[in-house]
Amino acid sequence: MNPGLIGVAKTLIEKGANINAYRPGCNAGTPLHHAAKRGLEQTVKLLLSHGANALVRNDDCLTPLDVARMKGYTSIVHAIENHICYFSGWMREFYGPGFLGGFLAPRLLSRKIWVVIIPCGFGNAIKPPRFELAIYSTLQDAQPRTVISLLKADIEEPKFHKPDPSISIFDQLTSKHLPLNL
Image 1 (cartoon, rainbow, N blue to C red):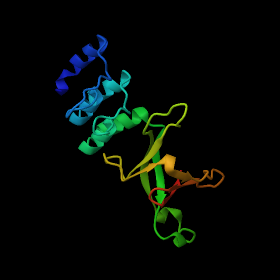
Image 2: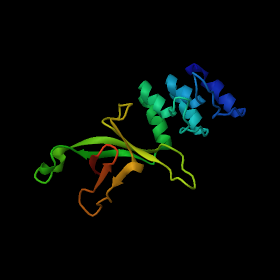
Image 3: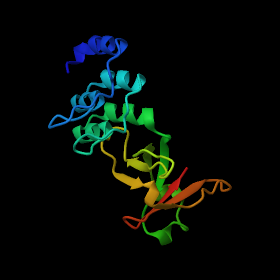
Image 4: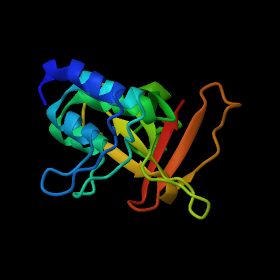
């Protein structure tokens, strides 16, 4: 796909082309997979704006978001995440020995992180939708530092009554505790 062919893509969509058409095999995927693989940001945004399904997996079980992350296309990752996310924003992650948290100012033992909550599967009447929390060190990162399945996580109720509201997530798969400030 040539980036200069965005006009052709628009015309095909206007004429009724199936934007979720799936091509099986070694070059498997939907047009969104192919645009994400080649770093075609305008094409990705065009497909998403016309209803392309960003959760479809190709023959390698990768979504278009997974493909963009692997290729390192930060702008594509942001475009897809912005389209499908339920929440995105800056939070503060606490780190360091737990016993120091009560003695030192929280800002001394915390760092800003970008977090995104996105669906990672389809829900139906029997199974609830699945979500994951992707944690990025910076907005320039295409690959998240940590991904936590929220289906397999214990989430402590947010403490909104405190001057510095916080939430705590315990990832049961990795036994990792993640205290965050809102």
